Length: 237
Image 1 (cartoon, rainbow, N blue to C red):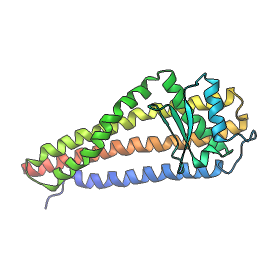
Image 2 (cartoon, one colour):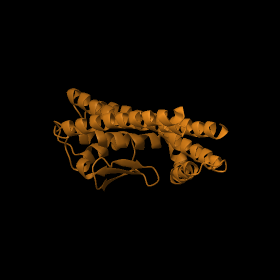
Image 3 (cartoon, rainbow, N blue to C red):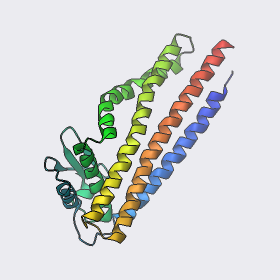
Image 4 (spheres, one colour):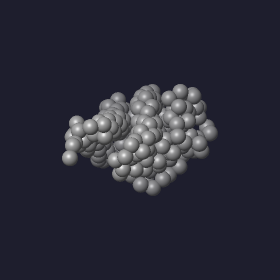
């Protein structure tokens, strides 16, 4: 049986993806554990920090909500709600302050019409569709060796490309939200200077998870293309 470079290269890429993801998860877990055990000197909860951040930017139409789980914090632009997880909402830790300010950073982006956030929001319906059907088509393409399966595989790869693009667009959105958060935390004296450095370390570790997700998606796309090309070469032989 013939196995092209795409198959062997694909396994290497899978291993690289696992390594990148593992490193990113270790970094965020370590940073969150460290800074969630350090209380801010002002002892403000995550919800209080969020309220102060929004107030400082003149944003009055965004609510602060609470969601269950750990690191499930997010801003919903459709309902204009900054959702803080149980471990952030009532916590006075540096990690809670950093995460709360970061999510409010997204609310600030929304209020100011930050273009990458608008683009990402517009892509959500497309990505929801592509993420559901891309792998179905890809697996069907892999399951059959006939030429008829090739279009299914190619369409699946094209749909998966939308997910890759979404991950790439997410990067400036997340980095910008963290930058806004750190500036506001310092300007509004919500954290002392030495605490801001801790918040920066926390948000940098969090940003690495998005970088890892983007790199993993790109590498996965390359892997699929290599395998598809390898299958095409095998059929021609």
